[in-house]
Length: 195
Ligand SMILES: [Zn+2]
Image 1: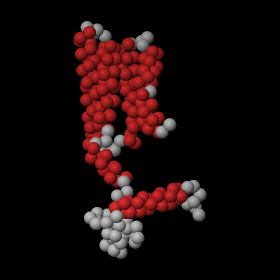
Image 2 (image 1 turned 120 degrees about the vertical axis):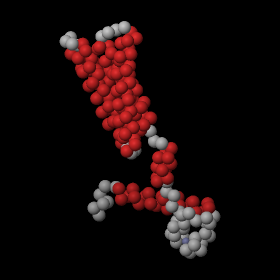
Image 3 (image 1 turned 45 degrees about the vertical axis):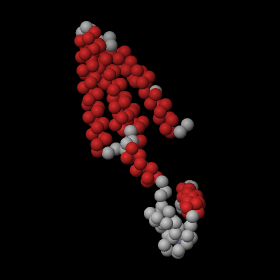
Image 4 (image 1 turned 90 degrees about the vertical axis):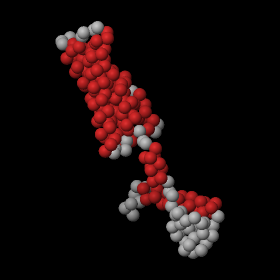
């Protein structure tokens, strides 16, 4: 199982786990004051969902200042939406129990918060293009003398004068990358560094 697949499966498990946390807090308290029990269960579950979600995905997010600000603004917005949903649910249903309002508000806030973070955290097209550009080996070297031929408009080396076809150039780059990869994986092998 790849780590990405594991994180997707753990994301799916968030909802049932949140229900377990909610009930674990609610049930021991509910014999006393219902409103306090529901408020405590909603608060603890909200913190659990936020920490679980952040722990799962924070390393996959490119944290820029605007993304951090949007995450905070979105979280505050979801909190407000939850409060409004709770009050509206009480008004529409005629159930004047505040515990009911807290339950509905917490549910709406949490269910809104997850897609909001996904939209804010996902990679934008410009970021994707930049990531691909950085990971791609876009440097072309002359196969004969090693001169950096990046950006040239002719497949002729200005240093040694050798003329290549595009096929020859690309084949030579692939070969060089294989050598470089083999060298770097040999360096990473434990025990080699101390020799
Ligand atoms: Zn050359």
